[in-house]
Image: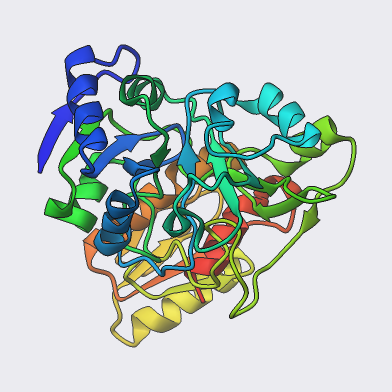
Amino acid sequence: MRILSIDPRRPDPAAIAEAAELLRAGKLVAFPTETVYGLGAHALDADAVERIFAAKGRPPRNPIIVHVPDLLSAEDVASSIPAAAERLAKRFWPGPLTLVLPKRDIVPSVVTGGGQTVAVRVPAHPVALALLEAADVPIAAPSANPSMRLSPTRAEHVIEGLGDTVALILDAGPAPGGIESTVVDVSGDEPVLLRPGLLPHARIEEVLGVPLRRREAGGGDALLSPGMLAKHYAPRTPLELCLSNADALRRTEDLASQGLRVGFVPLGAAVPSSAMRQQPLPGDPERAAAVLYDMLHALDAAGVDRIIVTLPPDHPSWTAIRDRLMRASV
């Protein structure tokens, strides 16, 4: 495994060229996006994509997002671009929006979990865009972490989770967004929100002029996108949710009195407690998204026995963060 530091604003062409060559050769490359770090492989090379599944221990029915450099390139992997998809792409690409589209036969079934649709997005991070342009192939890239675990927002998280399974890591510092993209299925008659994410779904509804229906996958259902499994985005340490800072403090004190080392994540501000380590979650949803996974990675590394988190309010601005925390606590 090689690690190359790269300027997130002015990516070094030599580093990008090396990463692109590895991708075309069927190797795995971890790279930053504006959401989290991705684990990339040549999306049209089934063997290369299989290496992603092996490295992550990823369930075979869980699809992988395909990254392309622009809307025109999406037609290389999608058999059609419905009108709703085109409107959303023109408004939000490059950006943290993934669109589920009818797939072309050229896309290997391993990418789509055996389904007939493909999840596609154009990332906004300069390093990711430069890599896509240089590689000149679509890149399949889930988050660069072991399956079900916390997504990586730093190169260090990738190293810790995947180690030598990755040929090259492009280290551009922290991923600015902090959580994954929003996923919308636009392959059918009505748009469906499959995963809330960094792009608030209210902004998507403004463009479409209709509300998004929400779909949850059942235990044996085919999955249309990543992020639909009940258990996901979880730290190694057991995580519990409480509805208020007061409830979270009581639970923290109870566990601490039993001799457990507790990591305490109150909402908004620090609260005096017996926690071994405390890291308040910012009260602003955008700032909270940017630091959530980084905080949970730090608590994992601190060696606590339990993580107690105050669940943010049930408000549209907090939907994505609540989704991640509830899946992490299952």
